[in-house]
Length: 585
Image (cartoon, rainbow, N blue to C red; front, side):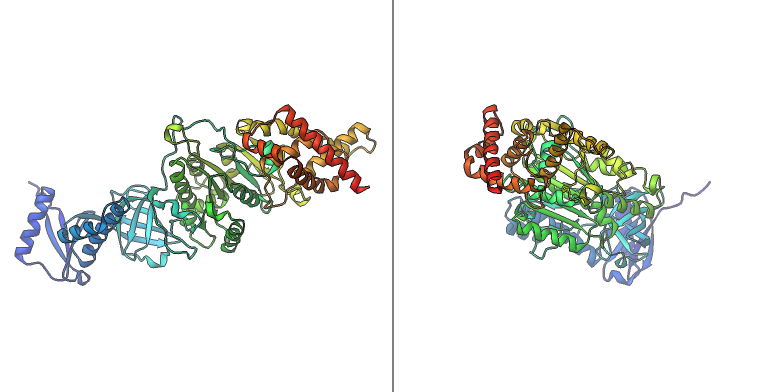
């Protein structure tokens, strides 16, 4: 008859246990696991006067460090109770007086290999995907790959602090970030830690980074404008609160400039802005923060920074951290604008992690789940139902193309996820047309639902007029003999293109945009020289502020434009045109 092999429990201690100690430990194991265990002693001088009992993946840590860890966990719970409004002093006194070290099992693993921000560990069979672990050195990591024989962890710190053979402890907590009003005006890293030198941030809550998106029932239609202050976008490709509009184009075509102008335009509109910088130079981020401060926009903005010098895991989690910050405000009934700059670098960071984790590469060496990477991120932007407070989060992801190739893997993925795209063309940018928006390839799938009636009526046929001008411009390159009607259409189109040119950092208000559009579509600027259209525009807006301030305020306040008001704008514009022509003569 075969004998049943007795399972083993390992005792790590400086001295071998005596018979009484063995009997006591054996009784504990039998009571705990309802089975007899063979106790194996292994000498370990690092335990001091304590010991560590290892049963499978479970560890009973009765060393000085283990007791300190339990006390630290207790103090962390007390801090949370203090934030909830409890009297922390009395809680401290009663908790410390009654505190006893408990023999609580904790799962531990061992580092098998480490390198390039990736750690493979043995053990921790009960761990979950996305769970945070803590290494002996204090560095934290997150489970990203679960296998039968090992676990893959991405590090949130320097991998030189983690050595082969060192212990890893489970926290049983999902990766998350502290959130709250205190983050407004601050620059933080992807873990929510301040990096602007302005001291610690008082957190109101803690949100996990990978929270599920709101369901269809929890959402409502996108119907409120999110004004960018850019005439080209607000008139032809309107963005609504809760929408996801992609900004796409080659390097150095003004993608970040559009995002920055949109942030500046939210001043006084009760919108919280979050700018997530992924894989950028630290100097570029510092310059952007400086611009926001000078314009008074940092008061309602949070910058989440994951620079190019930081490891790929930090760049990978940065957009999820920023989204969690935004969700805190959205679920409190506020409107949020979040900008991901840019998701091309985010995909590259994820590709690096996946290849280091030995995942199979697919198209362009990206793993097969790269589509899910961005879809689960962007789906969290929404306009919540009134039952959930009616808050919203509007996403402006940025994607960089190579030589205008919108058919590449990552651009096509994100185009299919978002509700439209603003395509920036290099040729337009270098010709001086800024913002360099390609009217033919750009689109907003929300459309007029996100426009006020005033803007919808003022914009009229401007997009169609520009499309006709672009076609005619190409056609006339092959013909030198043009009739007067064609010449006038060309001059009109050239004037519209000049009108849409806008200096960076100078967003237009609603009434300014309405005045420009109504005047332009009524052909008031038809006889103004193309090179002087912008000067005429600036003078026209100043004239309206002086002569028709009540009308301008009414348009901003009500968001409507009656036929009488439209006629008044056209007549006033013609008055200014006469003054302009007189002064020139």
